[in-house]
Image (tube, rainbow over the protein chains, first blue to last red):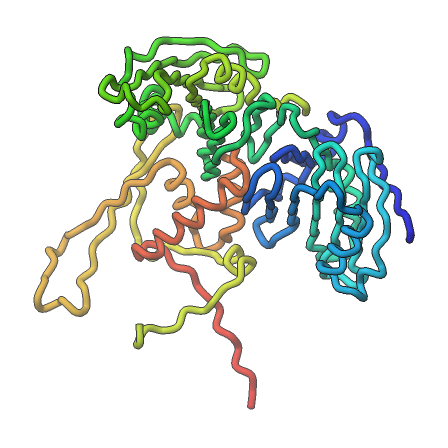
Length: 314
Length: 132
């Protein structure tokens, strides 16, 4: 089987600053994609999920991953998966692809469409997380985008380690104990909710932008009121929001802090946290409003302090 | 419906290449907001409905006012029959520092609303008839 070598730059800052690219970090995977490409369909969790990335005109990249069976043979899995994806005839033209971090990949196979437009398909078995990944690139012409640009920046996170998240322009880092519970990716209003095992201790991070338009609609405490509105049946505000300051991305951001208390008549609802903390911040540099909600204030402050980490690598 | 003309199905590429144009002659009145984010008010003269002309007569100077936010005003001002949908999305993305996807979704949704209200139309080129 032929082997192809993939050139890479080792400095992550150089990779991001190379051209107009954005970092996509989701469920432990990290890769650089052009600014014109954006996720349009996101499904699944750390062990089993998919991402569809498209530009304004058509789908560009499809990612699909799942947890690998411990006893499976990587070579047999790759052969079987490639045959299922491209067909028996085309599977004979598959070649091994040497990835920049060779030790992180048990197997890496690439199929290049000989007569585009068509699909270039890559399959890999990641050692750090024990997951298998399939990437399909919709090639319009014979280019080296998949092997030369996308795969050189693909990285995985070890299972059980803290995770870095970056989607559209919301980027946040979470500790190992938190996993993604739900997300809302609306234009200008992005929310990620993380929790510990079995949905306990939910922490929500929300980014609204542009800040000027958002503040023209209502002030920051109005947005915080909107955030706590769905909780009104369970919680009551303890006091008026008070000013607060939080360091985010090396800057001191001013905002408001509010505390909610579980209603007294719901004393028997032990699954509902007794107290919730809401933080609302205005980031003038990034022109965004940041709103956080959690029952653990320290976790929330740590989460919000990490917002915008992906921008800091430029 | 049975008697409605069948609307042509457009691909994403074709939809982005369309050049919307205004169907009403009305001036946008700017409303100054915070940080120079100006919204606008568009006052449109109401037309007599064809079917209800004898039953419901509208006053001669009846108007309807639409209120736009700053993004809506920006999109409206770029609708001139010469700018394509894709160009409007890119300009919006640059103006408000938005991701292309974040600019595309509300722009297309807003244009659909304007088309439904009858304020904007998109000319579709007729297919040339091949000689027999």
